[in-house]
Image (cartoon, rainbow, N blue to C red):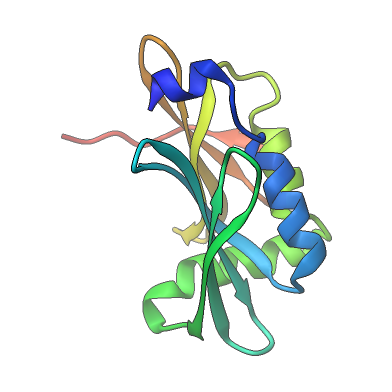
Length: 153
């Protein structure tokens, strides 16, 4: 994946996120980059708290073409991301804007970003890949500041 990202032959994830946010009334709650058949693919999940629907999209990173779309009712397993999405809506902020703020001073390529709610905190968890390592960052939605990460074996 790092080799494909270094070549830079793709749209930035934020561009694709903004495009989706303008087309759909829900809130993005999950973003992943995967390699499928040698191509970078963006997988984005969006939740609509009013209709209780979860939509999943796959885009070709090269040009932002929609490859696949599925919609279903979200389940109780999705309650963390749903609560975090509600907090994000209350802040009148988009997922793409939150991601941009969270990675502003970071180095590396965004490979994952997801909303969650745990221990009474709504946050964005991000993974950035650079040449040397993979970094994980947690970003508090309410305070718009980085959170220290808990680590365990």
